[in-house]
Image 1 (spheres, rainbow, N blue to C red):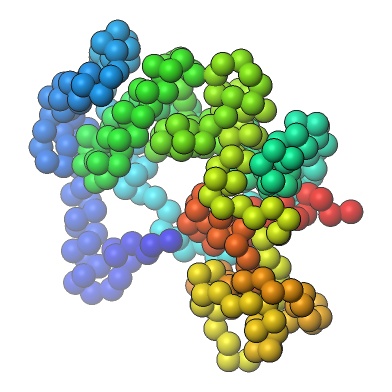
Image 2 (cartoon, rainbow, N blue to C red; image 1 turned 30 degrees about the horizontal axis):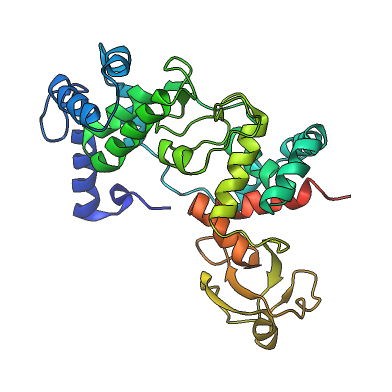
Length: 332
């Protein structure tokens, strides 16, 4: 998570604050380059036509399309990353979410077991991801995906990325997986109960229920299988967990998930489990993560599957929350 430069002291902080204020005053109808939205949209329409999107679909979804000022506001006012891991953890892995996760695991046991067998991803991780991303499908976003992506693509800050995602969203509509009115998601274009960006949808979404559509908005089988396919395709190791809480010896600093050593080597360096018992005597590559920014708080030894979770969302807060929730929903 990045800290906003406007939080720094002195002239640098004041100049950053002025720049941010000026950016927020940009009109919604003009991009950072000054190109009016209707002109930009006309050019994009031609690009979409040459990419194989039908004129009928483009007429239906782009005619009368306007940027959403609230999307720009949210994009420029993202959280500063000042929340501690302890606070994040208490909010995301709440007792209510743990209880609901246990109910969802039981309620969907049959389809989850089938998907677990197919993809090698334990059901508890699928349910935990579902819970952290959308509170088990309850909070999926109400922004029209096409309008949100068009707003961000026109704005210019990450124009290339969002322009590509907008084109992918049109491909999804053309394939008939969802209607334009029902294609809703977050302000940034993440869609459905799995919160896939359109590119992730095209790469990983699965028609598990066999109705001819990959419906991550309404079909739990499709949602679960799509999540499992994402993790399996990203390198999930079947039969391996994510990691465990540990205690570090005095003077040791966690280097992160990417600096890996075999578990026996960490043991020789003095790392033990949180309860003081030795680490498992298995030759598994592992890194060590301490999520609090000041190095205080708990530390964790993490395996390859934790690194896979970070490919979903490159945040230790997120990866550890999903991992802990996955463990807690199957605790006796």
